[in-house]
Image (cartoon, rainbow, N blue to C red; front, side, top):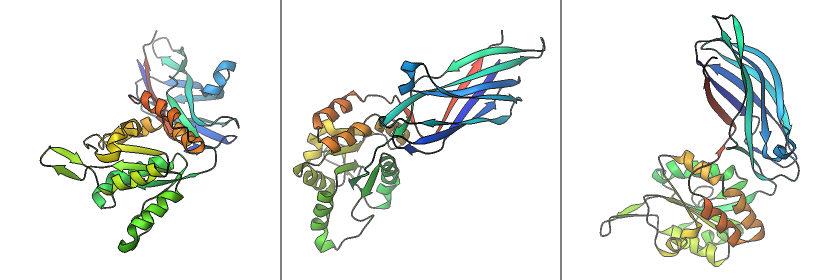
Length: 301
């Protein structure tokens, strides 16, 4: 039986409509027989109706337990395509049969269309991020903020990007929220309510969400699943997305399904359209990022 891992790497984490990019492929042979790769490619969702795809021919034999570079090719994102761009990967392999002393065609294989890259149009939006400043909050918060930035946002948090005089803190926070295009709240556990046995989040998150809501700024609440929110954030469950701090990769995948509509909400202020999208997010369906891989195997004929 042949076993392998096909890996690929895009030239950038995020593209813009009309950009040209490139992707490289490698094949790791994890089995005990020789493999021969003759083609690798990918098909974006905007190509499927035309039955087109980007591909590159290769002529690479990979010995057992070896990992070799296969090929590189370029692609173009159409100017009218933006947001999540799904794609699927194809590859054509042969396996060497030592008994017959011949190559067996394993055929062309396609992955599912659950991988994506991002095509984000300008402009970059400014997001006020309401989150904890102490190190114990930033362990999770910094990782989530990096995910937000990948979606074309410049982030700002009072106490991190810029410090403020404590006597002027309320005025500075209010001014920065008004200057921002949206507010994203990261509700990390702060203290345990001994009477109710529930974890509460940082108190100032409630006030900052209230300011953004009052100024009609789009709001998205990212809530640790251990936290029980009260006040206004607790009443905004339709605008909240829960996460597990021990599995932030799942949050990254779920953000892949809502950040494009969130940007559209900022641009058009159509809150209802965003709520419809957020209501559909149940389990992670998309796999995004600059690097991808597939694990495959087959029985010899």
